[in-house]
Length: 212
Image 1 (tube, rainbow, N blue to C red):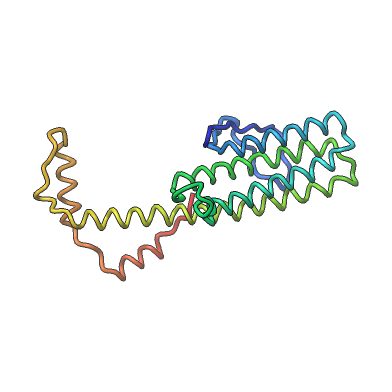
Image 2: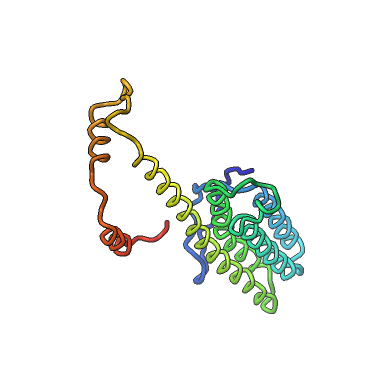
C-alpha cells in the first residue's frame, strides 16, 4: 500500500546537510514508511520532554532508518517479496514507490538530526554520525533502485518495439478519430530503417545524462 506524504523543512541548514526540501514537495510512500515517521516523531517528542534521552533517541532513529533501508533492499531490490509469496513479481510501480519512500527518508533525516542536536550535550552529539552514515547508505540504495527501474523500463520498451516490428502497419485499420498528423507520424516511424548496431551502441555510450 502507498500514500502521499508532504515533506516538512525548516529554513536552517547544516553545512554538511543537503539543501532544504521544498515544503510543497510530495512523496508517494509506503504505509511502513508512515509507521517509521510516527515512531521517529514519538522518540523526538520524548527527547524534547526529557533531553537526557536525546542520545538514546538518536541511536534508535539510526537503527530504525537502517532497518527500513535493509528491509526495502531485501523485499524490492532483491525480490524478497516474490520469494516470500507476498508479490507475484516486483513491478516498476513497486520500485518507484520504494524509491519515493527512501527519498522521503533522505529528506527527513537532516531535520531529525537538527531537532536532536539542540537537545544533546556535547558528549552525546557524536551519536548523530550514525544518522549521516545511514543517509549515505540510502543514497547508494536509491542509485541501485534507479538502475533497476531503468532496466525494467528498457526491457519493456525493447519487448514493445519487437512486437511493433511484427505488425503490418499498412494493413491495420485506422480509427476514425486518429488525426492526419498521427497517421503520418506512424507511417514515418514504421518505414524508418533501423540504425546500424555499431551506431546504436555509440549513441548509447555518448548520449550522456544519468538517471533522474
